[in-house]
Image (cartoon, rainbow, N blue to C red; front, side, top):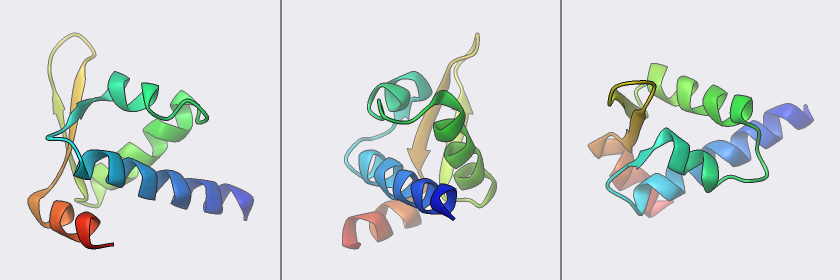
Length: 79
């Protein structure tokens, strides 16, 4: 149960970070979540990507750009 609460908090934090930015590289997102492991951040990013909450774009050689979808951006701002 605690894992679900942590994942939910991390989900909200990631969406809030992305709402204030035009997007971030995955490495930058990891830097802004120092209390979370790489696996935890990636699990949330993967889930949000699969459910349409964010767009994950390959930028070459293992670099990925993460941004909110337009509809998600408006929702995150109003939460």
